[in-house]
Structure formats: C-alpha cells, structure tokens
Length: 104
Image 1 (cartoon, rainbow, N blue to C red):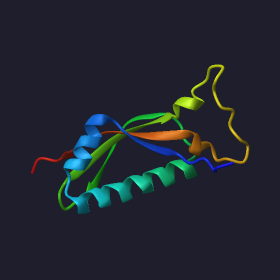
Image 2: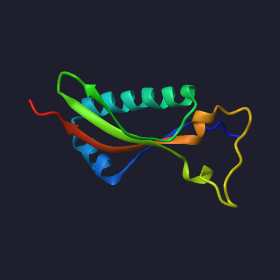
Image 3: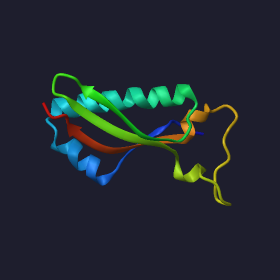
Image 4: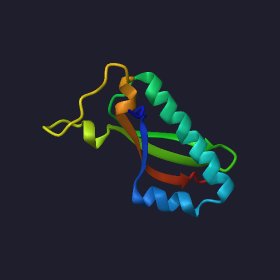
C-alpha cells in the first residue's frame, strides 16, 4: 500500500498565475509550498482558511491558501477510513487560491 501524504491542489486561477511566473520563481514557490505541506503533515492537519505568506521577499510575492480535508476523507458512505499508522495531517490538502505581487 502506498504511503499517504498531504496534497497540494492548485485552483485554476492560481495555477494560471503560477505558470505566468518566470521558471526560477516557479521553483521557489513550489519549494515554499512543499515546506508548507511538510509542516501540515507534522502539525496534524485541521481545516484553516485565508492563510497567506510572502514567499519571495525581494520581489514582494504573496501566496494564499486554505487547508481542507481531502475530498475522499470528508465523510459519507464512500469515505476512506484513516489508518492509525498515518499522521493525521496526511489526510488534508493545501488548496492554493491566489498568487500576487504586493504594491510598492
């Protein structure tokens, strides 16, 4: 059985904004979001909304996201039951909402 990890889901608008960035910035933002994902797994999850952080201080770039349970774990008869050996944070996903530049 494959080990479960917290996911990163890019809303369409955020995905388009991501691909509009220069390649170097895409790598920096992807690395930043991987760090957020790792922190989520270690912290144990929990639904959170309207989170944001500056991911490139020099350019003044900001990203916003929510944290929600993955759809397959949101309940109902088809919901997957959590494994006792998997950290709770792995059942959540980061939903990236928007990327923007701060005004100077």
